Image 1 (cartoon, rainbow, N blue to C red):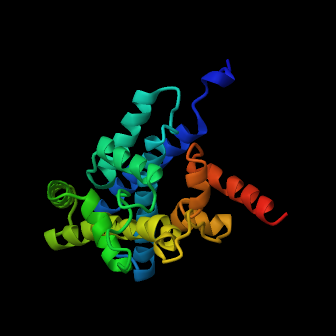
Image 2 (cartoon, rainbow, N blue to C red; image 1 turned 135 degrees about the vertical axis):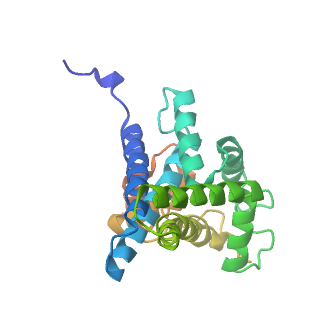
Image 3 (tube, helix red, strand yellow; image 1 turned 90 degrees about the horizontal axis):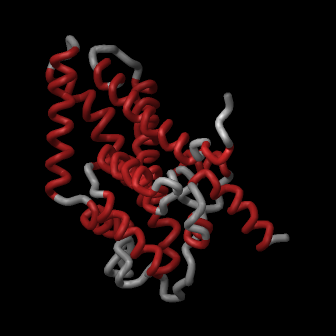
Length: 252
């Protein structure tokens, strides 16, 4: 017996569930194979895979902030967003949603939490300010405690030595989070919004001129930022089609 079309889980929910599940499974497998010898290129590929899945967690939370994961069930939508942000970096969902709503209401202004206080600030200073506004000392302590517990679990459940377990946690948990924060900042904040801090300030964020496959790898289409700000009711996977439509309008 089929499911009525109106009662089928939305595509956003299925993709979000898949991203969260992939993140959990990769964390449950990779650190616990610390005793396995791998060539450097495979370790690099696995770190990049974990980084992409880590970024995927934030993208899930971002869509939840716009109530796009499960629009018909706002409480479930927010619960999914809260879980994704907690797994991402022990971030509080309600606070991040309020900050993100301010970013959309007041982009590139002095009240925009994602914009540098000093318009002359370079990328590194902007990134440090960006991180300081979202990651508190308490959240850092939670992350360190989680990584220590994960390393202890690896030692207890495998034949890996404590140094090998610590190295595996650094490779597959700590480093992917750091790289993901840079990925989100560069492709989702710095490159799209830097045009708005110039003396001849542009009124809108910039979209990165990337083909869809590269845009997906870069940051789950977060680089199509003008389209996102103009149409915040679109899920991340709907942005390429919106980008194609906007290019047709601009260059018929």
